[in-house]
Length: 329
Image (tube, rainbow, N blue to C red; front, side, top):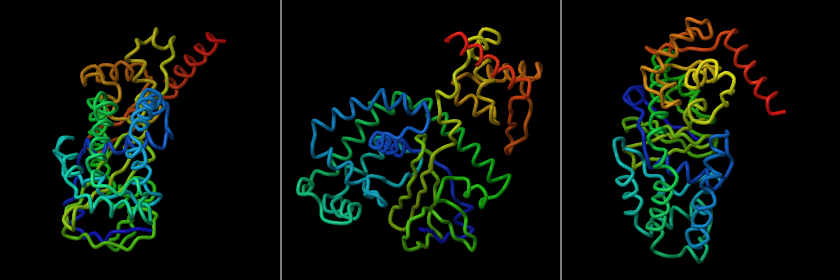
């Protein structure tokens, strides 16, 4: 397993940051793997895979570069600039473009665990990588960035609240598969057998992305380290469970959507992120559902109250789902 030695001061000073470039690279990995984790990802892949494949078909060098840099265990480092927080996508991808060709080839060699294919023995690899990331950002991420940003911000709020409630050790254990607190100032960051790294005194950031089943680590010299993880699945699945037509007719579509989402505990800010409704609208829906006995306060995550469906709410959702199925039969 790979692990980092992290002092208490470094962990206490760590922070969560958002990164458009990390979100874009995670989306590139999803386009490459095509392994959707939920219906929302499947819809996104169906919408963008044809154009992505067509672009690679027009550019054999970049088409070979993609699987080469996404190694079985090691991602070519120049593709994943360590997020600093507060940067635009353009600022982040400029760091990819500025990598020297020699360094890019060295990173690819590590990813491939051997010599580069002759087609990749060239000096424009950083430029091609940056161009592809820019295409993925402009065509497949930027149109959804407003919602994705809300989802990522809601995840950060929930993680920070979790740290305050149960401490760093438990919060890190729940971050992503392969990540856990080992004790004695050791943070396991993946399941691969890599030498440990001493990062005490460095800047440590945690970076959520919406694509599920992805995650990686990166570092910038010995000064900055990042652990990228998939955000909470309930937030990332923008499609989620469909709202039964009959339930929407009874409660109104927006209010029914809130009730359907509350099959698992969620806070008001998370509901705002997922539904795209305003804070006031979500609050009004929750008050009506509370008064009707369809949802209840489940507990707290830091300062945020969590809500969940009651048994009565569950019966109503299931009844609506059954009626919708009957109507289609």
